[in-house]
Length: 114
Image (cartoon, rainbow, N blue to C red; front, side):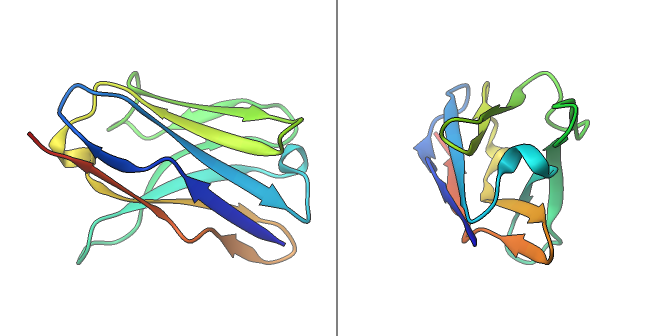
């Protein structure tokens, strides 16, 4: 079982990115899938969660209205659409699922800089 993130990069303020988190060994539909982010020297920060059963989504206040989480059941992938990016969004973004254990992806770097 694993989670693999992709899609990070270097962008300018106001740009958009779409991060992907592809799961193997379990169905993303069956579990809550959460995105976190972390800046070096700081604690990991919750970005948002898409619930397994209902597909409802919850967001942190800092990203509400700019970020969107969605799921593609065919690809078994969860996406994080990041719009109107700001320099303070710079971080490593991680995907997480609590299956029969805590499962983290390797992270993908997002850098927002002019």
